Picture (tube, one colour):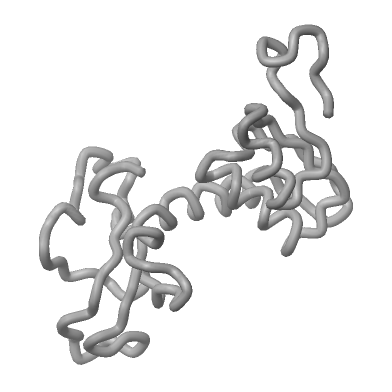
Length: 152
C-alpha cells in the first residue's frame, strides 16, 4: 500500500452531477489520477475528501473497510500488467510474487477471467497452499529455499 493513494469510507455528500453514488454509500478506490505527474501527492490522508466518482467503486458487502483499503492500487497494477502483457486465453504465464497483493489478483484474474492454460507462480514454502488455492497450477520456488530443486 502506498499511503495516500487507496481510500475507503462513506459518502457523506454528493454533488448535483453525481449519478453513481448517494449519501451513506460505502466506497473504495484509488484517488491519485496523476501518479506519474505528481507522485508525492498523498490526497487521501485526510478525514474528508472531494473525489470524482469515476475514481471510486461501491465497497463489496463481504469485505470490511480495512480489507478494501488494501485493494485499489494492487488491483489496478494487476489489471494494467495484464493489459500491457496482452495476455490471451490459452497462454501460460509466470507470476513473480504469487502470494503478494498484485500477484494474488493476477493469478485470480488469469484463472477465473482470462482462461490461462497454465499459471506458474513463485512463492515461499509457507505460502504454497495459499497460492495453489488461488489457481496456480505449478509453483516455482526460489532455489535458495530448496537447494537443487526448483519445481513443485
